[in-house]
Length: 86
Image 1 (tube, rainbow, N blue to C red):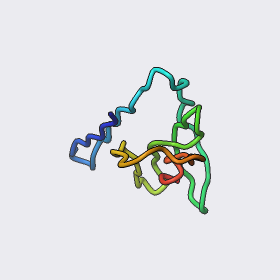
Image 2: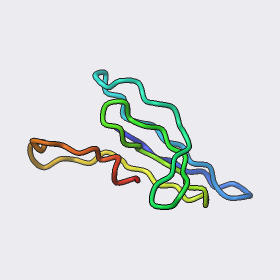
Image 3: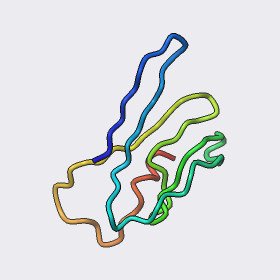
């Protein structure tokens, strides 16, 4: 299960994220600078699906995707949920 925690600090906050590490998943690509939608961001990437599970923009705005609870079978042609973060 993924977890997201934040800690208030005198000058803002610190963000901590624990990614669900399925044993079948390839190791993640380390955080790298990228650009999308006209915004620069820093994000790690999933080596299997390609999407990030968290990111931080050049404006200092974070975004993250946590696990959900599926109500039915997986789609026949799944798309990376990490695209939601982008």
